[in-house]
Length: 162
Length: 416
Image 1 (tube, helix red, strand yellow):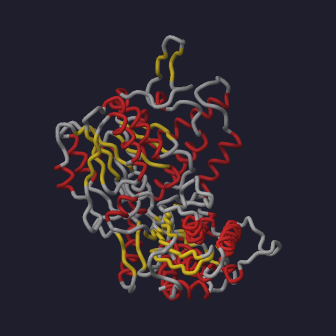
Image 2 (tube, one colour):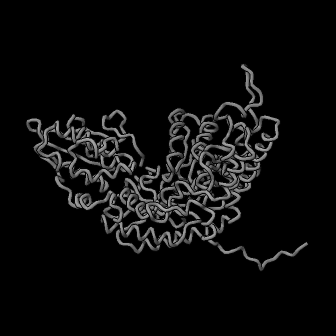
Image 3 (cartoon, helix red, strand yellow):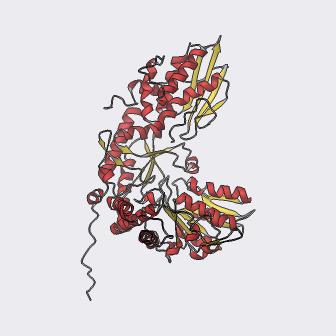
């Protein structure tokens, strides 16, 4: 791609082609389904929380490349992290994707996840990137399913339309 | 007296000259020439229509049907002249059969409230088709729920063709209304609407045609179709947003109750009784979008000068070229392969989600629509959550289809 700010960077393409932690967990302690009814993206996420720490995490689903890569990189980022650290990362990712968090000024823990910062310029794609994080939030709070279109969800990002 | 010249042909379709009329087509998107292939969502506006809006706003604007001063009389005359132009455009018998609405959705809701709520009751049946846009489903569901009426759905086959036999089999003595699209926005299928109307009318059942995707591409003759209602939107027809029309047979419109109450739709008002105005004014409560109506009048003048037959022929050429090119591409499948189609090409790329297709094509300047196209029953029929859709207008070119094809090849290189 000519545009260096383009969303489809090699790291995202790589996670789309070979998603990490893709599959199922036996007897997870927490799980949730994430759904974007506007485009049909669907994600199931399962994790094992041991001593308030994410010991194992896996996801499955049908979705666009942005959503799948975001889910894959999320599982890598939160594996081994405490619930509190994961929750903070969820907030930071959401802030980055919606443009509310100025990643250049405010300290954060996003690291490689910064490759998704380009979605802030594509309002219709913000939900694709956020859906896995949305679903992780639901799983950690023992909510069985979540949707990008449910207004009462604390992760709801009222942006764009597909 | 001059003899009719038969040796003078209409000028050949000059797409480059036509493109010159559309300032927006000179834009670049991210450094690439804009290739605008989202015409089924909204078309672009040519300079003569833009100029007409400016002239109205600069020298002719006042409220209509009210004051005796010059500007109000000019604005009223121009607004009513626009109605005459629209009536001619669809060959309505009388100009009072054309009601200005805010668009197709508004027109359908007008019929639902004005006709449906008055004449459709418990146990009655309304026939729709699988091809309908949500705007021709939801109002009828609301009515069915309110009245205890029933929705029946005429199915489509794997090509996206409406099944005439199964449509006809839905009729019974409880059938009170048919609402059907003329052209599918998601697949491009042109429905056999003329025969469908004839079948319904032979049984005394009124028919509303959603012409949102047909009016920009085909010659529409409401007398030949013999439908009770026909609706379309201005912004898909090179006109402004916020304007559209509902055509209704005068006798049918006369029997209906008003949809919205307010000024301009009354003859007299006391707190005891209101006498409604005559059609079409009975259905045009409040100050209408006067400038938009006049702009739409200019838009149909513009299209008529080119000729709807010439437009249809050019678009058919584009569709045939694109269909052939897509058929040669591995991993690309056209969704909707009806024999009779308007300029819509819905497609899926194997292994690539439509949203990725749309975002990546945009990086090459190519604007397509992705998603369910407000036609979820169509998507469900094909077992797809979404498709990508390229939709053509008469100002599109073969070179733009080549750009689309190249763009899809690049998408496949990146993602598939």
